Image 1 (tube, helix red, strand yellow):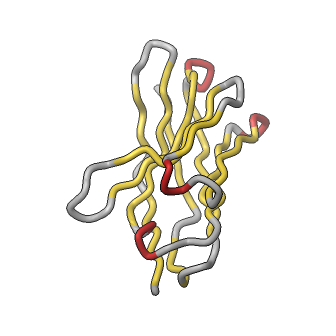
Image 2 (cartoon, helix red, strand yellow; image 1 turned 90 degrees about the vertical axis):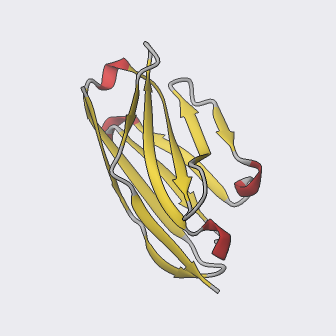
Length: 116
């Protein structure tokens, strides 16, 4: 069983930056990829960025060039560096882990609010 704990959300002005962290514990050797999703009020949850064990990354078009996903294996932690934040980035951000057997794990979510 994989547990994911997120941190780093908060309130920031447009144009500002935040860094989200997600630390995994438990069955970490079963994890094939990790990522960040977000869900704004009244909208579906969407993929923001993902990174595989081979460090292959994928980004939503809306965040390309502004967000960077990275990992620190020694700490079992994945980061999402968010720069040039916009009000439309406001959402609850969820850490996600995908196991080799395709099982998905989710964190509890962290609120990111960008004021205009």
